[in-house]
Every structure is written in C-alpha cells, then in structure tokens.
Image 1 (cartoon, rainbow, N blue to C red):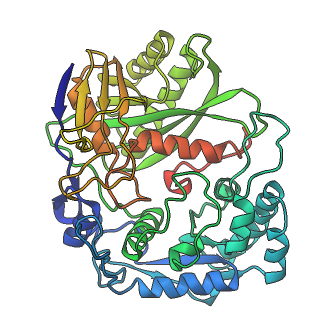
Image 2 (cartoon, helix red, strand yellow):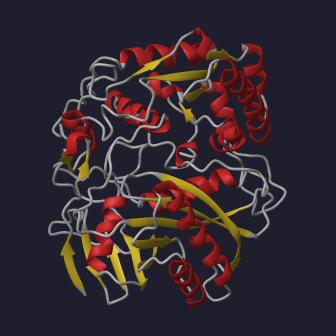
Length: 475
C-alpha cells in the first residue's frame, strides 16, 4: 500500500489566468471566453411559473446584478461574495427578462395540480409547463428557460409516490420529466426552486441528496445559478489547463439506466468531454446484467459501437481525432468490453487509451487526531486498485466543508498506459468541471456525474426519439 497526495488542480479562466477555486478565478480573471463569448451579449431568460415565482425570480435576478456579500464567518474562502452579474461585471454579460419572456400558469391550475398524487402531478405539471415553454420559444426566442414552480406544487411532486406497479419502478421526478419532454424545444431548461430566490421557503420533503442540500447562503446560490445559466447559454466559464506537451484527450463517461417501465433491460449511455469542458451526449444500445458481479455491462460489439460514436462526435466537433481517449465506467470493464473499446480506438487511429472503473467504496481513513483526510489523498492498494479522496479537508478553504466522514472513490485501473497517480489526478481535476456547482470539491468526475444525470432524463425519452447532443440540456 502506497499513500501520496495530489495537489489541488488549477483551472484556466479568461486571459489564461489560473486559480484552484472557481469563484475566485472568475472574480480575478472572468470566464474563459470573456470578450469573445459564445453566449449572447445579453442572455435572454424566459421564466415560466406562478405569479409569485415569476416575480420572485425577476426580483432576485435584478438583485444579483449587484454585489451580494459572502457569508460571514471563519472561512471567507469557502463562502466568498458574489460580485454581481451585469454587462460591466466580471462575466461581461447580463440577463434580460421582460414581459414577452414570461409565461404565468393560472393559480387555479397550479392549485389543482398540487392536489394530485405525485405520479399524476408530475405528469400533468410537466405537460402544463411544457406548453408555456413552447409558446415562449415560438414567440420570444429565449436563450434559457427558467422553470419556477410554487412551493405547494413542488411539495406534491416530492411527496412519497403511490404504490408502483413494479417493485423496480422508480417514482418520477419533475426535474427529469420536464427536461426530457423539453428536449425537442432545443432551449436549455434551468430549474429554480423557491428557496433559491427566497430562502424562507424551505422544502417540506427531501428527495435526491444532490437536489436538496439545504438552503445555501445567498452569494453561493447566486454563483451556482448564474454560472449554470452562462454555460447553458453557450458560454465557457472555465476549463482544465493543458500543457502543450500533453496529448489531446477525449474523456468519456459510461453509465447505465433503467427504462421507466421498471423492467431490467439496461441501456448504456456515454458522455464526451474535452479539456474545455464541452460535453456531448450519446445514447448507446442495450446492456446486460453480468451473472458474476450483478452489474450492467456491454457486449464487445456494443462497446465498439459506443466508443466509435463518441470518437466520431469528437472529430465532428474538433475537426480531428484525439490523440488519447479515457473511459470512466461505473462498472468493471470485462475482457469483452476492453477488446471492444480497443477496437474502436484502433479504428479511429487513437494511439493511447486508458480504461478505468470508478465507483463508491466503504473504505474510510483518518488523519492524526481523527481529522478527515485531505482532498487529493491517494492510496494505491496494489497495481490495479486505488482509492482517491475527492471529498475531504481543503487547504484553500481552511476546513473540511462536509458534515459526514468523507468516502473516497474506488479506482480500478483495468487497461491503462498512464500511471495510477496520473489517472487519479485527472479524476480529481474532472470533479471541478461541474457547471451547476461553483464549489470545486465535487465527489464524482464530470464524466460519470453527467452520465448519471443524463441517464435520469433519457429514461423518460422514447428509444427512437431524437435527443439533444449538448450536455447543457441535461444538467
């Protein structure tokens, strides 16, 4: 067993400025594409919701054009101020909302929806909101649409579901269903819960842990919202730095999801990212549960097809093939899958590849005095297996920002050319590429985090339906 520490990776911002922290990097240097942004000069934001929701969102966005103080306390680097989002601010653009960009759902309709059971409420609310979104797209052409349901309706849609017909069937989430149904509109959706613009409106129920983390301080909420909207409107806030001597790399995340019918047929999905943080969504073929480890896997042919599609998409986007491909998979790579991925890399003349499985583990460790491990601590158990702490104490914050003992990621190096330490460093860096969260210490690399988020949405999309290629439509 070998224990080492990986320094916190830096990110690159405007003017080639670098910083380990997303928020300080944006304050000091602006977004990566500042001055030449692919986002609109002013981002047109449509809002669909209740009267209170529309007014609350518009009022809060106006407030966020000015500085919002950071949370007072002992850790100023953990809760910094928000500098304001305006044309003359660090982002170099502002948000535009006017009467043509809003659509209000009648109070009577919202009250009726809030009185339904969870499954029916999600289905009918998605239909009602989607109709208003479609009207906005056709009449006003927004860059991003904000969905702002009222508290009572959200409580109904978050409530425990009625008994499902199948024990494997998962109750639907409004967040996933509305985004799935809105894909044909070709305008990204940003969900906003009432506690975002009014912290007094706390949720009654707690659902997915990644959706409900409690009410953050206002500056943090502003950072997260505006960074996400900027990215969804076509901007690139930051990227991973790449030395000129490094190979151009395509990062692919492979995960699996169930169909909404609750049967056990698995379907694979891939995410393609490069060091700029540009994500592309691909939907693969069926997967099978392996009898030995009871986890989903691809056939060799499907592995070849999936990675070949990813590399073709990369070539279409960048005009050339990458020199290297990295595959992060949520289950182990079987020999048949390794052979399939290798065949695709050879077909596209990609000279270097690294195949890793990345998952959770029950492994725990402490520093002297029972302090949590440092984020970036790497323990190589043997030549194949390592554990990497992507959550833990952070020197820049001066504290461990979590509430519970951090659990590391299990990394299994199954067909690699780089060293385990190098590959772990990439995983650590990719945890910082989440445009929905401006605090940089994410648990999962964006490859797998995004793959799972996309799977949650694609399970509500027909097998033959056309999907959007940009990750911005799924986050």
